[in-house]
Amino acid sequence: MCKLNDFDFIYSFIKDNNVYMYNMITKTDFTIDNKYFKKLVYLILKKNSSNKYLLNINNIIYIKKYNLIRLFNLSKIFKEYFYIKKYDLLSTNNKKIKIYNYNHFNFRNSVITKMYFPNKIDNYEMVIRNITIHIAAFNPKFINISNKKIFTKEELLLMYNNILLYQKFLRDTNVNIHEYLCNVDKYIRILEYKNYFI
Image 1 (spheres, rainbow, N blue to C red):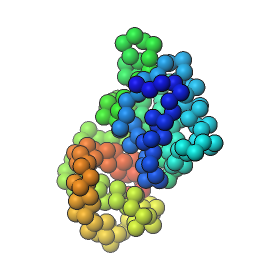
Image 2: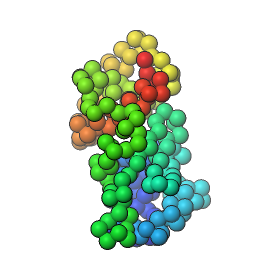
Image 3: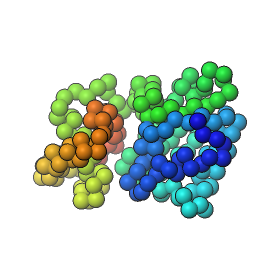
Image 4: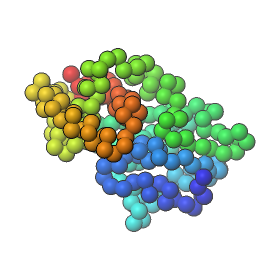
């Protein structure tokens, strides 16, 4: 649990330009009084432009009405909208708002899930494609590729050839592979919907 004035609980999770807001949510649970919720968000955004603990320009948390939380990445590649159900937001005493960690988001009942996500990863090919698009999106070496709306077979092969190396990186950093692939799967389906992928 964090205190109202303890804003460092957010900034401590933003280490550099490669850390995205959903990673912050992955790593923390926090509870704050409902009446201070909007004020907290306002101060966080205000602090973004005036404090030494700057939020990365790619990371903005924007609270909207109807319990809609928008996580917006300014790379213009990824946009996620999570509708958090009322019972997820309110604690038992009905006076607290709790933001659960990433795994506790009810994706199957979220707005974007209903629109974009199939129920499961259908096959290994999809997993491979997910990894390649992730590499293209986050590895500077492939930034020119990732900004394209259509990929050639040669470009896909280039990304595919880096999969084994990237898998080793995931193992070395103790990333939960299954959880990682599930998250990447969500991103690839957003890209497909927006015609970023063939």
